[in-house]
Length: 396
Ligand SMILES: Nc1ncnc2c1ncn2[C@@H]1O[C@H](COP(=O)(O)OP(=O)(O)OP(=O)(O)O)[C@@H](O)[C@H]1O
Ligand SMILES: C[C@@](O)(CCO)CC(=O)[O-]
Ligand SMILES: [Mg+2]
Image (cartoon, rainbow, N blue to C red):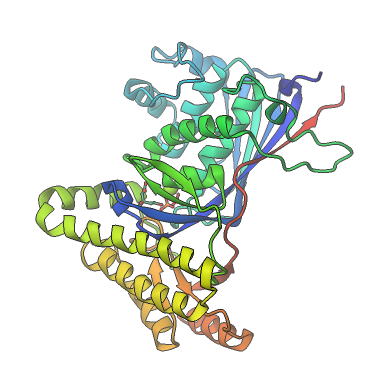
């Protein structure tokens, strides 16, 4: 059997939208998220130069960088003794050593995962491209982490399931017919937990919802205490328009700001978080009701109200709004639609709930109004699959 180390491995993982509960989920409340059709793709190609070559065309100012593997292996806090089946956080001292090599947090994330999962025992050229806008609230960092972890675990046949048929055989491309196959649930959980360690470097104190959606896909509810739960009946046929404010911001800083505010003003912020938790649980009830009665008008009315409520709680109480978001909220409201930020806020992307019967003319009028105000928008498809893999054996 051809070893995966002699193959080109290609992995993709979806971005996400958070329907309700962003930030509150960091404070132990419930959130609901769905995978998007926009995906990050990572291609691992073995090389014989004993180097790690990174090709990140989407990362402004990064381009292509290459290092000798020995440059990492010689570091005092190299993660030599990490058990690949027991994900752990990046050692702060190791991150400090990485920072002397390159001072980009996202690259620290990559290098930590690469060193921990491969021990730098295999040389690779690794290219990462994405349909997702980076740093815009659509989970680009999570899809980045999940794709990396899934590919590196596969490259070294590291399976927590012991190597079940699905995980060992998945992805093998025969006659260029892409298999786009997934992993077993046990292996997905390992991928998810390693990805969370990567997210911790980028987000500081991530809840874990972003990497869960990127790993498992579809739509899910999430709490820090109980983890993810796939919405087994799926999301009702919601139509979502995503608009990018193109305002860059730091998820880590925004998350830290909300945590700080909740610590400083618990009597004021706890009730807000409880109300957002109620919104999330009401959304789940409304979805279940819809699956029974197919009453789209009732669902739309409830969702419209909850979009407005969650947006104003995020902006007015958590302080993660932005004037560009407010502009989009008022533009869409004037045309009869309801909008909320998604992800960390502070700019980034917002989601607008279209109606089932929104016509093409109404949609193009909405999009051109947004565009004339400098905003790019597109209708999303949600509920997409999670991490997928393809293996292309290199013909000797
Ligand atoms: N295609 C990519 N190529 C290289 N690095 C990427 C790519 N996508 C994401 N990243 C890394 O993830 C970081 C963005 O993560 P960040 O959490 O700030 O934004 P996000 O995940 O898009 O938004 P949110 O977390 O609010 O959903 C980038 O700065 C970069 O380090
Ligand atoms: C803002 C937040 O709730 C979602 C970011 O996409 C942070 C997190 O849950 O890790
Ligand atoms: Mg992120």
